[in-house]
Image 1 (cartoon, rainbow, N blue to C red):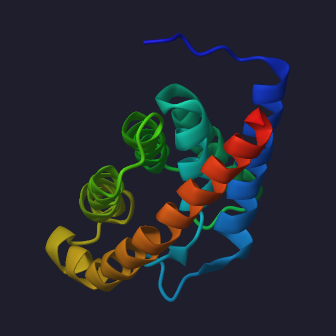
Image 2 (image 1 turned 180 degrees about the vertical axis):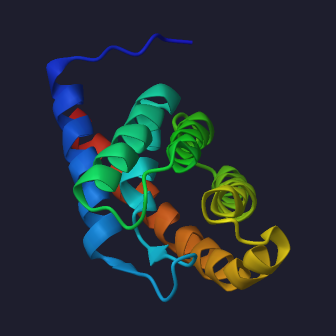
Length: 171
């Protein structure tokens, strides 16, 4: 496995992706309740995973979550959500960096939405707010189903766009 290098261009792109994630997460998000959030904030993390791999995508997820929590707080800062953001970047980078087959996209989305978002974030909500786990989990099921479909639509489009950009850059 090739070791990742943080050169100036890469750091600049990572900074843009962090800023983009913070903006999308806090200005292009629908929050019908405190526990439900519908957003396209996964896009910069997916792009980072495809372009740079697991570690940079993890760093982008973590930094975007921390910056967003302090610049635009929705509630108290809780490191559990930062852990979920880091694991999300790691997951997308690990599964989508070298190979973006539809099967890998489906696996990445399923793990991210049904394990990290639904199960783990519901656990963080239980710890943070003392909410009962199972009833909170049930109320978050529609969000998970919607975002699963949204991600399965958008990620293949992003893959095509990134691959087209890469082809143009090589010619």
